[in-house]
Length: 196
Picture 1: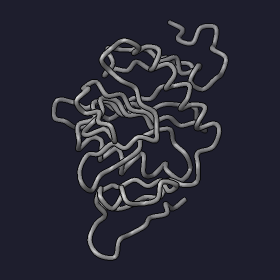
Picture 2: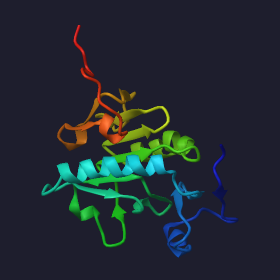
Picture 3: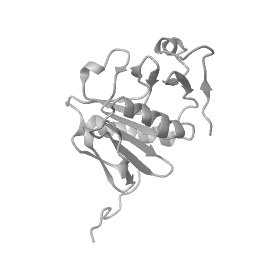
């Protein structure tokens, strides 16, 4: 499925352009290109967002790291403004009244048919370039999770896959474990990680 891309006739879009667009339209800027975020996500997508966010909010209560659910603007530069599904920011100075300035520690994107390509490539490159410590991609249809960690060279590693019956260990949040069967709302197996 192709993305609906709105292009400016002269030059690139900027944050000021983005901020002037109507509130009932949702866009993201990546390298000055405006990506339309409509249509609204399906119920399965929003259920996963809600479950994941609720677990993070409960686990991080009273701690310095703050979970935030979309829509919330993350401003990386004048030409890069995105609205990840869920972010966690551990540096309070990055959180302003209007938006997040700079890289969150953790970004979680839940795939939908219209955003899969953007989330897997464009946004992954953007997050890597700007120093997001951990990037998690959730596939509602495939029922699995991919996780990428920033290495010492400030590049994402090759990634790790997690199945629906596993716990996702969030390295950027002191190895906080998220039971994926609860995120996806499926029954846990009796022994999800059998030993041989």
